Length: 139
Image (cartoon, rainbow, N blue to C red; front, side, top):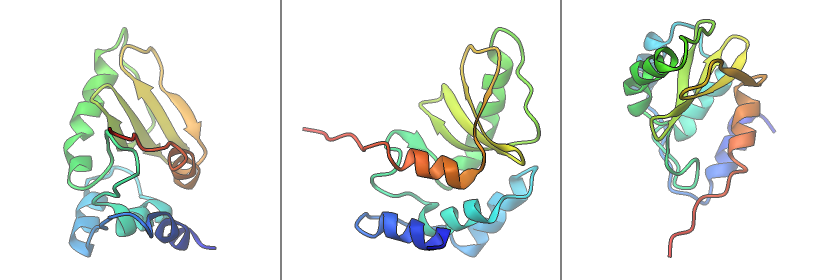
C-alpha cells in the first residue's frame, strides 16, 4: 500500500478535508526546505483536519502557516537559544511544544528545554506514531 492509500484508509471513517492546490503551493512557498512527498500527500488528504487525528494539536492549514513564528519564539525563549537545521513546523501542541520537519527527519521541541530531539527518521514514521494516539472521549 502506498502512503496516500494509507492516509485515505486512516481517514475513511472520519470527517476530514485536504488542502487544494493553491493551499499546497502556499505551504510549499513558506517552507525553507523542500517538503517531502509524504507530507504533501498528507496535506492533500487531511491538511485541513481530520476529526480523530491529534485532537488538541494544530497541524492543519492555515494554522501551520501561523504557528511558524511561535515555534521560532519557543526556540529562543528557553534557557539558551536552540538551533535546528533548516526546518518547517508541522504541528504545534497548545503553544508549548512542536514538531519540525527537516531534511534529517522530524524534530520535537518543548518549551524550556536546552535542546530539540530528532525523534523520527521521516514524516511517514512521525505520522504512523501520531496516528496511534487515541482521540480523547468526552462525556
